[in-house]
Length: 97
Image (tube, rainbow, N blue to C red; front, side, top):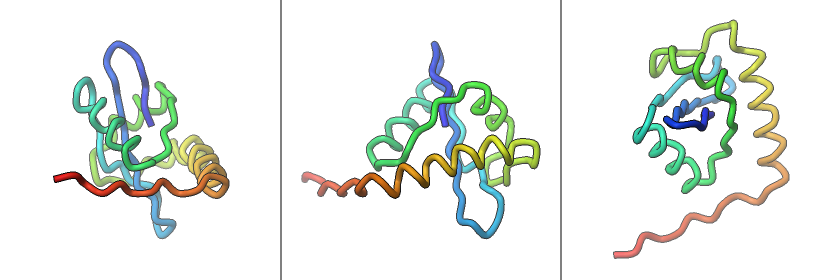
């Protein structure tokens, strides 16, 4: 999830279906851009939603998202699941020495 603007804000979520999604990374500026770039490199779907990214950025890392954000995050997760079912997985590229 990202809010693209003058300063990149990125929030990475982890969801394993056994509990609520957790915030696993938050970054602004250069760190935010590195989170976005790393997600792209690994084929992780991205969603641009500045207001949700801002709200999620206040959640402590490795903490479940608050109930107030369940519906917004669930909508995004449902979209990502639909997209990932229709798009073949990204092939990992071997590292060059």
